[in-house]
Length: 216
Ligand SMILES: C[S@@+](CC[C@H](N)C(=O)[O-])C[C@H]1O[C@@H](n2cnc3c(N)ncnc32)[C@H](O)[C@@H]1O
Image 1 (cartoon, rainbow, N blue to C red):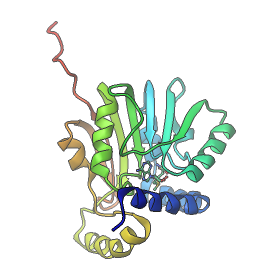
Image 2 (cartoon, rainbow, N blue to C red):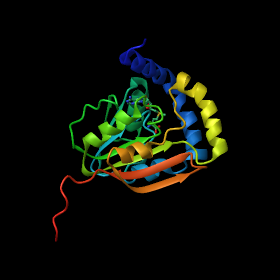
Image 3 (spheres, helix red, strand yellow):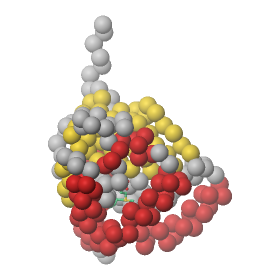
Image 4 (cartoon, rainbow, N blue to C red):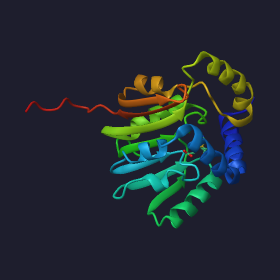
């Protein structure tokens, strides 16, 4: 029986091996499926921003000026490409190896958490979401986008079939719907869009303030 460390290392090796092939595939998906989602997500980021599972840094070019950005990912090979991209864009960003399921970030220290197309691949996405809630400041926001279970029954059946291979081979879950876990974790969804037969969902969710606002 594999330990959780062995399981984690297996997926780290998977992403390290696939890093060089990642951008062309993802650029194609961005064009045909995800559309303007990277821009939609990143343009809403403010303050201290933590990008979870930043990958090769495809979001970097979409952030506004004036934020302090840190990106983490389990794959050093993916991050090496993100470093190169950040240098080309002349961006001041901290990129480091880290695990979304156990963030090395203090409680309530982040204004914006960004996570794009990654909760489908993070083995324990519920744990990652509870870590996101932990590190967000009260009133801080999660900007999340992912491919999710379709709203169309035929597509759902196809997703179920594809998952038979995609989960064991690529760790890729097609029928998750992080919206539910985000709400269960106590975040308040303030904006949400779903398109492409319900396969793509993007949302903005806020961590409630600890104290109710003072009456004016
Ligand atoms: C599909 S890629 C998405 C990359 C990037 N967010 C994007 O939008 O292009 C999934 C990423 O999740 C990372 N990943 C998987 N499990 C992780 C974990 N437990 N903690 C941090 N990153 C993880 C992988 O290394 C990979 O870079």
